[in-house]
Amino acid sequence: MLWYKAWLETRARFLISLFGILFLCSYCVLHLEQEAVPGTLLSYYNYVLTEGYGMLVMMWVLAVTLLMMGGLLREHALGSASFTLGLPVSRRRLMMVRVGVGALEASAIAIIPTASMCVIASIWGKPFSLSQNLFHLVLLLAGGAFFFAIALLVSSVVRGEYTAPVVALGVLLLIAVTLGDQKMRLFSPLEFMLGGEYFNRSSSLLVGPIPWVRAGLWVCLAALLTWVAVRVVDRKEF
Amino acid sequence: MNPTPVIETIGLSKTYGKTDAVSGLNLRVMPNCITAFLGLNGAGKTTTIKMLLGMIRPSGGEARVLGRQIDSSDESVELRRSVAYVSESQRLYDYMTVAQIIRFTRSFYPAWCADTEKTLLRMYELPPNRKIKSLSKGMRRKLALLLAFARKPDLLILDEPSDGLDPVGIEQLLETLVSQCSTGTSIFFSSHQIAEVERVADRVCMIHKGRLVMDASLDEVRESYRQIDLVFNALPDEYELRMPGVERIESRGHQVRMIVSANAESVIERARAYYPSSTEVSPIGLREIFLDRVKEN
Image 1: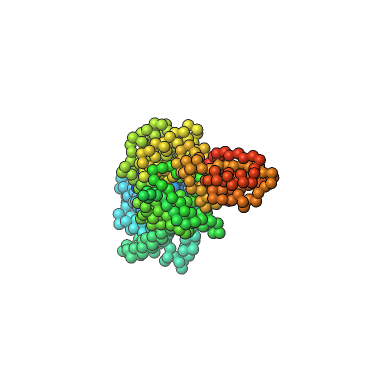
Image 2 (image 1 turned 90 degrees about the vertical axis):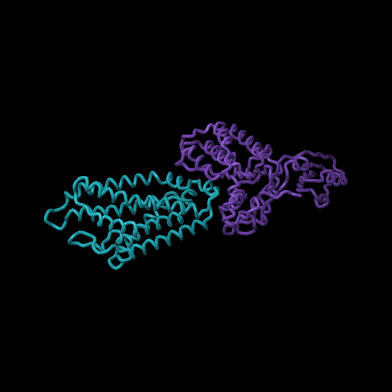
């Protein structure tokens, strides 16, 4: 039933995010092609895949940050933490369920719009590439895991119903600005998600094999941050 | 043989910076009775309860609830299977309906009593399909009480349970407390509502500035506590009147007021040796004792 609680707690935010992103992705597939200039490199792929995924990445990071706001500290700010902590459940289990539900929802917000882009393109007879979509999806989920964990950590450290999201968005901005520099891009999760390093300007496609090692490193870093968040909540006083 | 206490603390302390929220608390709450935990706002009642339930860590001392150590997280989870807690906060999960939170809570307690749930749903007139966020403060408190009572706990810990309830709600609450206790549930509730405590409690523990200032059964209080007012022509030295059982002596002019917790007869006997012109002995209520302890400390 903890899963049920976590779902009820986040479902409004999840559904709004999902349908919002779905709408924008559908718009990209159906309308961005008109922006393409015939005979130039600004092809369908450039607009739909690059622009569409760029938008998806930004919206996904924002949605996941807001989705991960919650948990015991937010309940403490709202006054319901005592009820949760009175139940015969360890804080670790509460956190793990939250991480589990959050991960499922975050994955759904990435996978469903990606799949919908393929489905809509095939229904309307537009070109689409399954392998390119998959490439983008792997980058998005692996790099996104870092942002997921950052949001979880912020919500486990910062008290206050509104303070936590404000701080989390501030941290996002800080990461984007500091690691957005040319020299730092290699360490930027956002750059990794956008796939800049693998992007071929002439074809507007992601090239080369999927960088599984780097993807794994981002996931490991996210796992470490998640572990820190669990420890922080375990030691917190309510 | 004395029964094992359901709550036992030995030198339990909690410090926030330089402030002692709870200081060297030695508490014994016995099973199958209603124990009131009296104290002013900020006396340390909620801090003590939160320590007992593992929500905050003690700075010193130790405690056991239902025989389990409170500072072990595994033990704490186990003890919460047999303990129901209603916090002073009126808030539950706003995004759930009444029926959803009942279903959610029920899933953690195999001994959940469906009869109690139905009875209290009817008695408290709680609409099952209403969202919690749209319930009034009193309704939310009633729902929290329902969720606690229906668990069939061995120990029920309530923090200011009557806050937010109307007189009818308070009456229903007190009746339910008595009936729960009669079915074998030990009850420990914090309050500063002395009238309620006097009505239902078997035992009273008083806390002031984080220290236990009184631990007595209500019968003891009724039988033994007396206020003795004396008028002397020549006032004796206060020291002469001090003896076991004398809790407080207050002199004003030729008048002396004594609060005694035991040996009232012997105290009067001693006082008579100084030839008082008037002696008046009256029983003393919990309210006077409480005010006296708070003033004294």
